Amino acid sequence: MTKELSIYIDETGDFGPYDSNTKIYGVAFVLCEDLDKCDPYLRKFYRRLKGKEAGDFPIHVGPLIRREGPYSGLNYESRLVLFDIIFDLLIDSPINVLATKVRKSDKSTDEEMAKALSKLIRDNIQYFESFDTINIYYDNGQSQLRSLLLGIFSANFLNFEMILARQSEHPFMQLADLVASLVLLDYKTKEGNLSTSESEFFAGRRKLKKVYLSALKKKMK
Image (tube, rainbow, N blue to C red; front, side, top):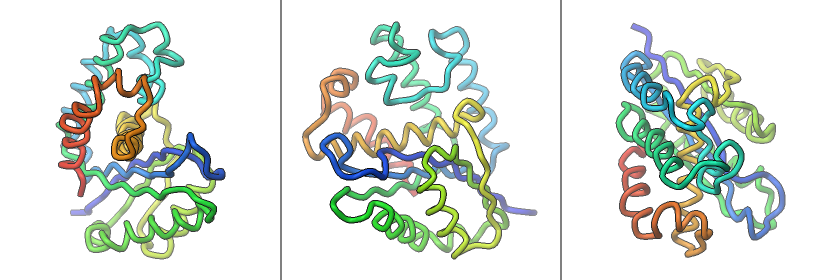
């Protein structure tokens, strides 16, 4: 029986120079080893979204927290419901998570991120090699990241395919967005510089760490 791994990828930050608003660059991998086993959790996800305000839109965690875009007209309770729906999919479904980040500096973000991603792959090389096929889903949101991913996977594997995917097309792309956002929030929590909207949304730093970041760590491979 062919073993297939699906990897859904998103990022936080950009490849531009360091500034106070973009102190880190992070990449999140959501790993699904069996899409059939995930189907019941995906169906539950869609059922819970049905009829919810802004439930027809892909869940983008950053704008959801900041009450921007399609969430600008939603109150706190409605936005928290949407966050909990996507967070529960992360916690309940049989997926694993990998993530890496670099602190931006005067050095090339491309070079530093290439090292971090290469290490992430090397540290898990036996896991990746256990699959006959690897499908990598990314929305090509940042050409630099796509090039890095192609280069690193090409150097290590012959059995992979990179597939263009949108958040609107698969909830696991939305999970990758969630994980990337939590990677950033974890960093900001440790640095003590959560924004006002972030602190208010999670009812403080302590709850964010104890409930959400603690649960994320349990999904880390």
